[in-house]
Length: 146
Image (cartoon, rainbow, N blue to C red; front, top):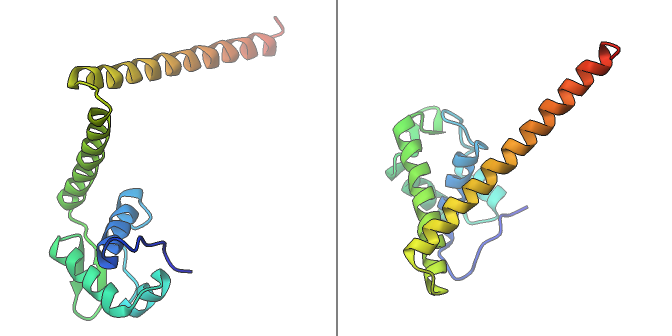
C-alpha cells in the first residue's frame, strides 16, 4: 500500500519528509539498511525515479549514506540526527507561534500559554505520583495485615 501524498507539493519532497519522520520516530534507526530504490518506491507507491531523487537529496543532507557494494543506510552520525531533530522542533515551534500570532496573540501571551501548559503538566504528574505513592503505601499496609 502506498503512502498518502498531497498533490499540491512535489512528491519527492514529501518522501523526504516521510523518511525524516521515520528517522525521528525510531522506525528507521542509525545504521539501518534501506530497501532498494525499486522496493522502496513500490512501498511508497511512487515511480522509482521519484524515489531515487528523494534518496539522493537525503544523501546530500547527510542523512543517508551509500556504501558501494552494500547499499544505502541511515546515517550513524549523531550530529546529523540531532540537527534533524532540532530543525523539526524549530519548524513545529514556528508554525505554532505563527498560528497563534494570526489569531492576535502577543509573544508574551504565547510564552504564558507554554509556561502554563508545563505548569499544569507538572502538577498533573505530581498528582499522579502522589496517587501512586498512596496506592503503594496502602498495598504495603494491607499486605502486612494492618
